[in-house]
Amino acid sequence: MANILRQGLGVARTALQYQQRRFAGNLPVKPNKFVEEWATRRELIEQEFKWDRKTMTQVLTFGLLVPYAIYSVTVMEYEHADDFAKRPKREVWGGSDA
Amino acid sequence: MVLAVPLLGVTALLFVPSWKTQTIRNIALNSSLLTFLISLLLWIEFDSSSAVFQYTNGICSPSGFSDVTLARAASSSSFSALNFALGVDGISLFFIILTTLLVPICILVSWNNIEIYVKEYCIAFLVLETLMLTVFSVLDLLLFYIFFESVLIPMFIIIGVWGSRERKIRAAYQFFLYTLFGSVLMLLAILLIYFQTGTLDIEMLYLSDFSETRQCILWLAFFASFAVKVPMVPVHIWLPEAHVEAPTAGSVILAGILLKLGTYGFLRFSIPLFPYACIYFTPLIYTMSIIAIVYTSCTTIRQIDLKKIIAYSSVAHMNFVTIGLFSQNTQGIEGSILLMISHGLVSPALFLCVGVLYDRHKTRLLRYYSGCGQTMPLFALLFVFFTMANISLPGTSSFPGEFLVFIGAYQNNSFVAFCAATGMVLGAAYALWLCNRLVYGVSKPDFINTWSDLNRREFFMFAPLIAGILWIGVYPEPFLDAMHCSCIYLLYAQ
Image 1 (tube, rainbow over the protein chains, first blue to last red):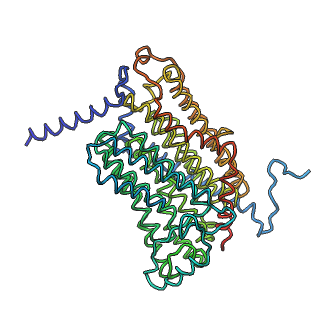
Image 2: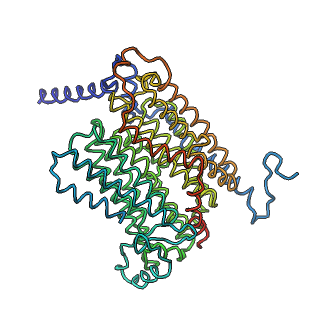
Image 3: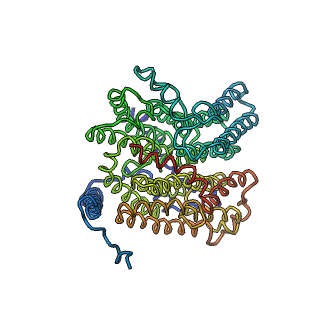
């Protein structure tokens, strides 16, 4: 059983290494170790991602606060330009009237 | 006729032995070229002063609203009303021509690099072409849904079988599941529409009225399906993954046609059927589009995979399109359609460029390329041209489309127009950075012997795209004329 597991792990490791090496393709350049690792990490981002204070703050900021702010300003802009509510036309940068 | 030719090609391919690869490729190419020529006839014979669906009875006999619609209405009392009616209007015309233009290019790009299951590959593309053409021309909501979903099957096979790496299976599943999940809600909405109106005929539905609450529910259900296809953030994850793993021809079809299915759905169904809900949800669409434009443009700047760069920039451009569509004015909608056509030329061209590099060197990492301008001058010239078209340089096809979208958006909401315009600046940033890294720089001595410029086949692949980009960029009038009446009808039908 342990042998089978070890073999399985070996195959998986080889597959991962094989995938890492393939980024450079067959160009006549020496594969850059850091580029290869970074590209691999980017592909497996769902495995690398961890919930911590920093990522939680980022998710809350860019997932909730920023969209809410954009939504609010968009709606506010509509309300400012609402003809049916008898609001005057907004003049952007002084308006176009002479 | 346009639908029949690729199917005839498929039938012919079934009788050719699998080992005769050259014959198979020739049959596939010729049938797709013939389809393209016939689709051009559609444009030549098209009556641009009419907003009704044309060619409903035959290729050269434009038919009015009355006879076809009333005949279908007469049989709409039961579910047998679901009939295979086809028609073309000013909106679907250019999507049909775009589809028929891109499929021969897809077959040409795979001429040498697809060596296994060539017959199945060509059949998959011809079937995919038929399905896409049907989606753009079908006049029944349920049939639209069926063909809209069935496009997934050949695309799933193309990514899963002829993809480049081990992750292709994962990418194919992701593509399939994302799009299918959204569509389940759409099917429920279609059933609700049928039980209220008793018909699924598009022209009849344009005349029917839904309550405000029901419009909102139906709109959300349709939105769940179309937003995945566009794709809008946060349901865009499948796209870069699918692009990276798909073969070059798969990426061309994904970027050129499949992304347009979502925006075409908005245009064909959400806007004319649910006008109240469209106005109600416009701030939501605008918010999602702005986030998508800024977020994906910023994400593009930090990518090093060539295909991912173009995939993320596609997301940004398609969200320009949604802004134009929901600006609810003629300029915005016409600009959106023009931008979709333009994106259908520019983005496939950029994927073809990446395919040219990948065929030679089997890597897409930008880090390993440098100084292409010295070793591949013709390729470098075309790459710079397509990149400039991607950032809407005046004189290229994206410019009139984006300009009209901005006019439409500004009339509706100046804040949204301002935020969307930042996407153009960011777009210029990543495009110039990409050009700088790929085309300029020092060419390594080892590369000089191994790098070869475009061959004749590759050049002819790019030629129609260059012509299209310049034509729309310099003289977009014929395109705008053909779509104008249909756009007006779409906006003011109710």
